[in-house]
Image (cartoon, rainbow, N blue to C red):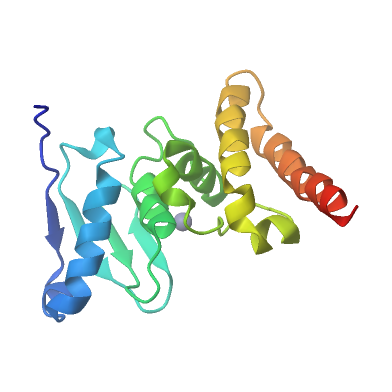
Length: 170
Ligand SMILES: [Zn+2]
């Protein structure tokens, strides 16, 4: 049996006052997501609520805020990735998307918010998500020897949609 340290989460006061029906889903999605982040296993993540955005993170802290409405694993993963930026993961929203997608297939339940993808890829996300993940993983490799890894990735993602669209219109 593999024993795993349970990552600890904590709710902000405002979130703690919300009904259980709302809290349980958010907490269970965050707990599942944290399992994909061994780097966070020793940190106590505070979960708060936001209604204005899908989610947000306080850089340099361990606080993420999530919108419980239509919450996606992608959003949870994206906010958790923010907590690691500057510590092995480069800063920036696009970098955050790339490292979230590359990390785990759990986070492929919605297209990225900042990374430029074609309309086809966005519209048929389920058909493309695995290819996008593969490109994100390659981009992280590419970054080891090239500075413009995001440009490289986005060029590939845009042509990915075009290639497939051409094929399917035959
Ligand atoms: Zn972000």
